Length: 201
Image (tube, rainbow, N blue to C red; front, side, top):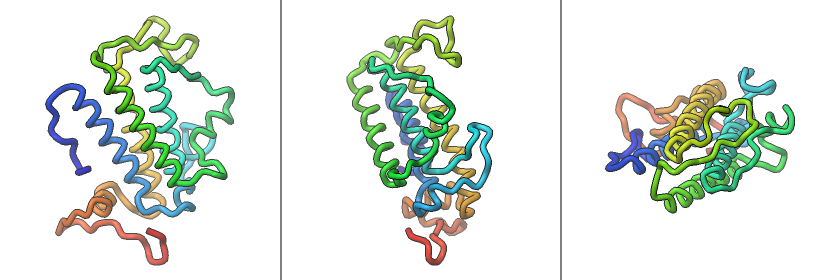
């Protein structure tokens, strides 16, 4: 996917195009990382009592997208973690998880989103607000599918920004050189990212 969202002809294509672009940008933060680097947490986070990693951010955003599309599809899951440990685990790669496995799960979540949206004709269709969640409004009965997609774009972009910061602190790589490397750009004034000597590609 190039650096910009393709031209869109309608609202649905625009929403899905911008969501796909933000997913792509988040994935780029993992481009060329080793398993060890995907777990590195170079900065403390005010988001959790723990720290943020590129692999953990991808895992978290996957869970977020599955939750919201589950609501759209009528398969509501709990929006509230049981405790702080469960919340933090959502941002952390487990012992049996790998960067490759969380990227595959992210791809699967994206495909599920596309499939669910393909069966919905009206983006204004109501999506009931789960009750009893303190960060959800108690004066709104339902969002719309349109609202959910806009929320997912915002959520994904926010965490893509977190991942950009974490990645730059790991090895100095920034978004456009990573994109150039992943997509094979040839830009005279910008050097595409390359792995350091001895680092896996």
